[in-house]
Amino acid sequence: MDEISLHILDIAENSVKAGAKNVVIEINESDKLVSVVITDDGRGMDGATLRKAMSADPFLPERAGSGRGIPLLKNAAEQTGGEISVISHEGSGTSVSAVFVKESDDFIPLGDAAATVASLFAGAPDTDIRYKHSFPAGGETRTVGYDTKDLRKAVRDGSVPLVSAYLTVRDSIREEYEKIRKILTCEDGGSLLA
Amino acid sequence: MKSLSELEVIRDRMQDEIAIRSGKGDIHIVVGMGTCGIEAGARDVLNAFVEGIEKEGLRNTVTVTQEACEGKCEMEPIVTVAEKSGRNTKYVKMTAEKALRVIAEHVKGGKPVADYMA
Image (cartoon, rainbow over all chains, first blue to last red; front, side):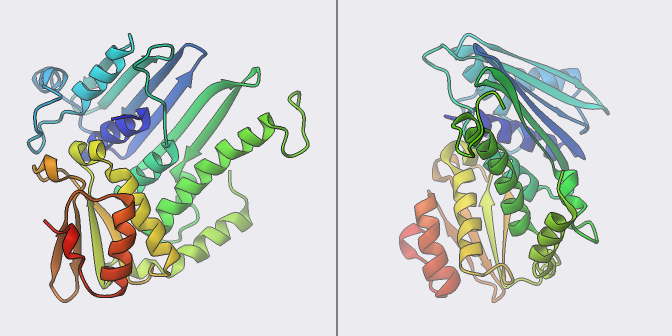
């Protein structure tokens, strides 16, 4: 996978399959590192399942449920000189963390995070997703955040239509990134000191 | 946080789509989104289908959903078009570009694209 956000989509899909009602995706970016944490309240894994998930071969064809996602993520992070860790408790949920080193030749960009969150929500409209990305830009730490619970407030009976949901989530997140880009390039007449 | 009027716009946009959720749509497009699918580009294929459906004003009759890995990783991204008539068409090695042709010829025109089938 050539984007971190594709790994995020893959791992978060696991959360959905594990029955998560809430998935939190938090990306903390510094000048040197990208740190990703995906936490869910799904059914979690027992020791044996977790060991199996961590050790599966990422390059063998997948059989339903055997899950190459974590090994693929581990491979991608470690190639940059980073690492992953997975915490899981049966009955409580799972948290997958990955750190990528930016100056590595094997570093992959975050990519289209808006499409990832939109795909995730459209594929599991009963699951709420909280997305947060903090990164340095123009001498400050900027934050893009989105909570699908806000979208739910707009729909009367709580059921979310899929095409609209996908586009609304994707475009809302894109808009947030665009606002920051405009601030940095002074497009709206503001200054970098604003 | 969204303002009240922004929420209203979202609500109106979704009104015509409520019928789809209850399965009353004419056409169901299912995009494989397992690890293999994501690796092969399924997210961008899904994006293209959603954009295309919106652009052609087909929100009222077409749903787009996702499914997990089928086990045929070398054929991903896989997209199945299921029609009310009972006809199911399986497309393999899909791309965002191919999605546009499927929407134009199959979804709108009623004629499956043989070139992209399994």
